[in-house]
Length: 266
Image (cartoon, rainbow, N blue to C red; front, side):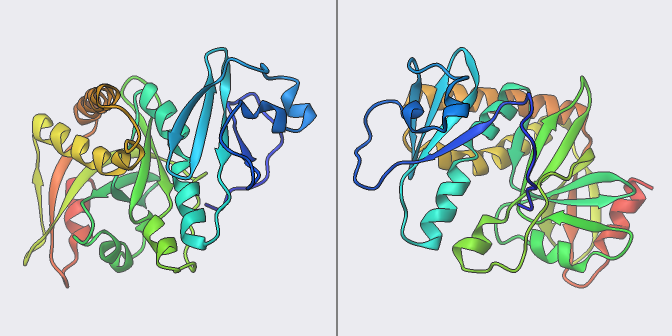
């Protein structure tokens, strides 16, 4: 993630606690925190949400969350824990009008373009084929944050499948962000072509893309809560589709698809 060490700030924090291996999940984890951290937090009244390999604690009077991790043996389990620990980030983003998307993020002239598609369609291949002044910022997942009434910022997020497959040679700087200019829904094709898309169709595809990212956090969530989460995602998808132009991008294996994007956005 290329995260840098920062001094404490006013922004909400994710506080990580590693539960001792011999202890069972019972009681609130505030007692395990460093005294300087613990003194600013309530000692009780925390609510727990169980996720795979971890438990997230939240408090209605505190913007911070506590992420209680279970001890893990292997790299795959550790990376799964890291991915699941981002759930509070997704939740805060969703609550403020944004959403994560299953998409690559590429930059040109200081603006971000999303190449959205399910796995295996060619997001990573397209990123590898880009030429200057295009620059790939990530190739699989993007966090889209609502910045203003009609504006969105896009943050690159990790390609988790690389780490599950023991490929550690790539990192993405998630502190980097760019204003989002357009959405392109990627399709494999024999020709390169950009086709404008209506807002309704764009909203549906944005929602599908967001669901592909979020569903992994819903395994231990009850049906009614999942229904509410889906509703929030769809409403945010409609707002995004209304504010950001969307297109179908037909990309061939050997063509110069980025030139078609440049024709749409000189």
